Length: 183
Length: 280
Image (cartoon, rainbow over all chains, first blue to last red; front, side):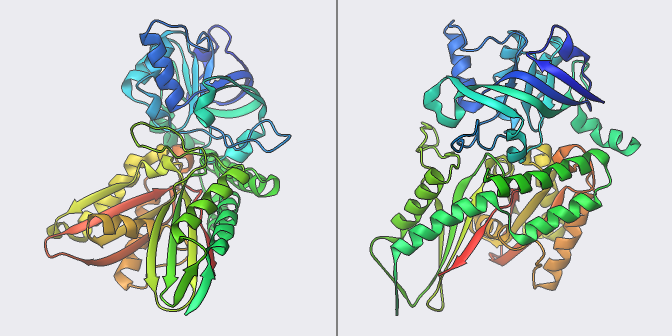
């Protein structure tokens, strides 16, 4: 089913999405990948505040290529999510409601998605030029020294994603072909 | 003896880094287009059409096809009649990569030390493979390699008794484990034989062979075809969400090996199988 929704997610919105839904996101999301996750995790271990509120937010696992002059961002497709698995359950338990990436997640992440009524979206891997056009603006808000791995606030308009793992524990990577063959 | 100034190498490598990251080779473009037309799954077809659109935007607006503009793998075939002047060849290659990635708005994805992990900020060093060949030309292949698929690549040290069935099983295992992580549809480079490192290099080189060209060894050609069919029957599909397009090609290179061994390397590449080739 095609859905248009706003981000940050409204209370309960993530839990209503189902694996296989094709969703267009509009609003604000944040980027973080390997190095930023490691740093956030270590900050939490030291009892410090995170540079971004997790509550109802969506993290995009993405490190863009540099923007050409006059453009908000360069190529901007998803990176492999499983490298963030170690850190993700903690962030979900802090209120993170959605992740955008590509590829499988481990059981701990899947359990944390269900436990928190969250959602895992896939964006099309290797479609960074196309996806960049749904990004209206980009601003580094933390960990600037990490370069492409810095945390960025992105304003997106109709950013296309597919629900892969939902709050009921469904996983499109396992059931996807079955759904396709029915259609 | 032919003399070549290394400044020519710098300029060419720079341009090739930029070219490879914005334009796929003709064989790859054709394979992607055919796959989009042939895909049966509706979601799979939609994804392949988006990838078509992505390629179009990349070339037209000069936005890299993928944000992971890779670690630069450079193959250099040097005719043994060639003499280089004006500096070190190796320095020239790294300088070409540095200029290509900084001036071409490409992502800097290389860290100086694998554990300390500080970004070098110019995507150097490149990974360079030299071959000395007959003649007085220099053939350069720049193949930026993304790590979503690189991470899913494998080496299997099989026993001779495992034979061709063992090879098939290894390739299919690697592809199945890669699944959605490697951004399918993929190109699968396979190296069989040699030593531990030689088979990996054979597999890497296999990825630079046009996807519409096949091995000239009859049984290897058949193996390429059979594995491609089996992979596409796996239903991993575009984006890992089901469909009959999981791989665009299986390219296999072989080499003599030891009586005790059967090394097999599977180097997986996503659909952004980039390479630019020039002969100087």
